[in-house]
Picture 1 (tube, rainbow, N blue to C red):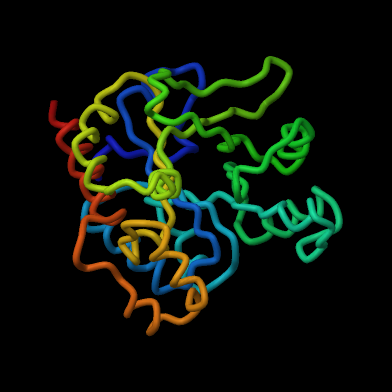
Picture 2: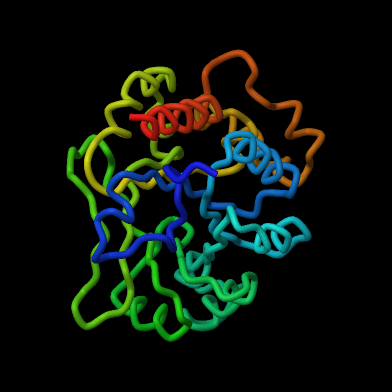
Length: 252
């Protein structure tokens, strides 16, 4: 197992060496069906990459992932319905968090759907034994050198990410344009956390239109497979380039 790629729970806030020369590949599962997630796992396995998945639901595959030493399973609660009066996951923040917490055995990391966060959450997260809050997005093009941090009276370590595949897709640019900057963003100083979505890896999304057109079929493996991008550079290709550049970084 190469050790350039680590899991979020490996970060030690007082030890720069636990993150400064490493890459953290994370995934927001977003209710992806097993065949989609399995596709991502096979890709990661072919490179012996450790990773963190933020889980949204239970399935046979999700259960097996929690037994893997190479995968950290955090949680990915969706607070958004509650914010508009929809109680499908619970009628308050605690109930919603409890619903998702019960999907994973003793999770320590969390990233909310839509990175939803407010000032009440650190205390709430702490009450569930969560230790890593991954709800901050600071884009790599800000040129800000990132590091984990925590407020002095809180136990929660805040772990920002600087890359999000959906943010890239929302720019409506040719994804291949980002290929040339991969070395720059990998070889920079500081914390380097990538946020991907299994569905974009599976579809090899080159723009948001491909995902939007696939939304009616997200639970239908056959129809999803028919909508995979095989003609142009997409998010799956970008992930592979990130991994391969990271492995070069290991040898420097």
